[in-house]
Image (cartoon, rainbow, N blue to C red; front, side):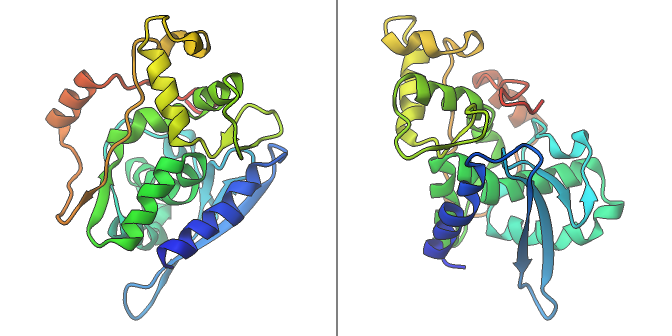
Length: 243
């Protein structure tokens, strides 16, 4: 689908699932990769109350498989097509392989609903050839859905955001909220909104990786991963119920 159609799909069919949805309601999302004579199809079982992908092609995922690991994977259209194709072998796939597929699927169909910046980057990947991101460069954003949702409510910047039944998670979190969150977190208390920053996030900023276009991307190796984590404080867990 084209960029406009993709954005309309997220805005009209994925994001509204969050609105006042009980925690045990699910929806099946079907995606197809037309990469040859025989298109491959993946069925994602997504929890409406938080957009978590908890089953792929009828196989329930373990916590080891559906919880984001702090490792890198390239996210782009080719990676999405490859993940759809590879997911046909989920019965024999390793936890690492499945976790990488979850990251890629979630970027296009879940994180894009949670964060405007992710939706923007996913749309750009569809509109421009050879555009992609290193997943690890946005992990601090992806692990702050709960904190930024609460910050938006506390500061009165909810705009057109919708909420889950517990009023604890909201979508979409706009870029302006992320910028305000970072400003407050780094203010040392001078920003009046500093009081709404969790203790673990004070003195730190949420990083959002920029797309790289026009050339191939590779996952960050172990050394570059360690250096990146040294320079960017990456929380070990999320604050919205996922560890």
